[in-house]
Image (cartoon, rainbow, N blue to C red; front, side):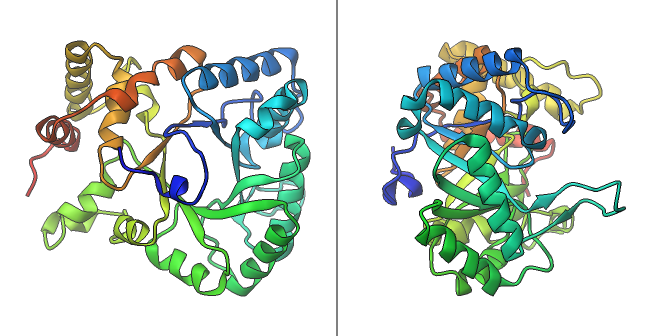
Length: 326
């Protein structure tokens, strides 16, 4: 199997990443972290480690900061784990503030990024992040400010590597023009249920392209610049692996049946088929599995050993599209 872009940059990363958005309870800032939340975090981390996952993905907004806090409690109780892990977090999204009437917004200002990283490190109880991502594009971004704070974070030892999430090739190029450190990650929504990243290419010069929203050329740019593409939502919220399909379109029902048949034929879980489909793409996509259910985490273990043929890959793609290719 080809080497991942992050591995080429010296990061000894697993192919799969555990997304930690589901840790810490609800998204209410006032709700306390309980012993049950800590237990859940321990079990999720242990399940991930048991199948070879050493990469953990966070964001400062996940469960209003409690996901990082509860993960930090795991590290406090098992400090030997820190140096065995790659820890990534994200910043740049700000919640609405009822008291002041401010809406939810994005903020790539130097002060906000600096404050966010300090908060992330404090909640996790760590000295540094392996990777920091800017979470969603800020229309008011001043790239010089981002460059300045990234330089500070790098030289101070608080962040080793930098990346982005949900950005197009052009948005990354703008930032990279000013930033000295290479942008090493772009995290995007991709799954067998969200095939826009493929449609944007195959619909080129076709009428069907009018409905495409995935930014054309982004995958190609990331491949050319050796930027690791990470997929959030790669399990498609479980629609192909057992979730009730109430109100889902025929294409989802048909594809779920197809995934089930392939899994049975190959003697693996349905989760493994769904992830293997994504991982067959030559862009070396790195899935960020969003479940914290230990059973579902372990169900992903066989993804790397599943070999889908070209015909099997296209059969799944066309089934999920719901219409034939142009």
